Image (cartoon, rainbow, N blue to C red):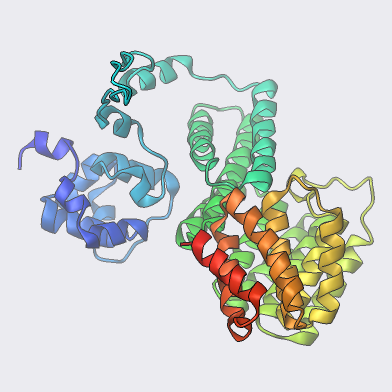
Length: 436
């Protein structure tokens, strides 16, 4: 195979191979490299050169003795082998834009389409040159701007979901990592590591909400590595709590509890401010509820309330935990109790939280409305449950949260014993139609 053929990346027939598609989705680089060798003519040394890896590392991955989870390395592999970003959970790479053909759209009315200019944006090579020349100098203003954008991302994620935000967040993550490589000042490097860690966590969260758990876990792990460099123990605790929550969704109750407790241990090393400890205790409660451990769940909820009651206005709470207010404490306690099957105790708590929850938080309201509907159905309040679930469905469809929609599909299964009732039959049909 000629060098020119190799430089164009893996052949399209191989990228379309079902085995390759599955391996890319799972980020199974052992299989990816083996297929590249067996079906694409890429030997270990060729893969190493294309992806800026050592041949020995490639050989270890091929043999299954080593895994690749570092996001920077994953991006290099995608670039080197010309694997489209979407196949491995990345944003479209620069070279993908260059390959895309631009075709004028014919006007349906019969009038000629307006001419399209292909000089609006620079090509990828020129873009890279300009980026190198610009070489952003880190200043306090740059850091404040980056942090403000993260806060805006989280607000928009709460209000509208993260699917549309993900490409922008991932792009900014790559940008910050690039700036970090060019920055020598230790003070600025620490701040940039923290910002990159938060962007990696946010990316993981958007994948978690999309129920792409394997990819989410990779980004959460990247966030942990970035936070570990600067020994940001509270943020490490925060990421561990995200992994704990994801474990409850994957029905891994024991793992969820272990991760939540590890998060609490990490937070205590740095003093453990009450608001953070309350949130982490509630994550542990979710794990115990998933394991149907009544006593441990109630104990963890009590711990969360105990910590929350000790919050002082003078506490230096990290910005990322300030969302955990009295309303969130209340609704999370209701959800944990609902998971245990104690609907009588759960229903008033969730109702109280929904009354005070911001109307702009569409995904949160959809999620909490589902849990209220679930507790109402547990109490055989079929008509109320269907009305509440219908409201949740409207919100979930508007915000496009696969996680909430999956909950509502489960709710539809719970309606089976009540299908003869008109509200249940109508809601079931609506859920089927909107989630098809």
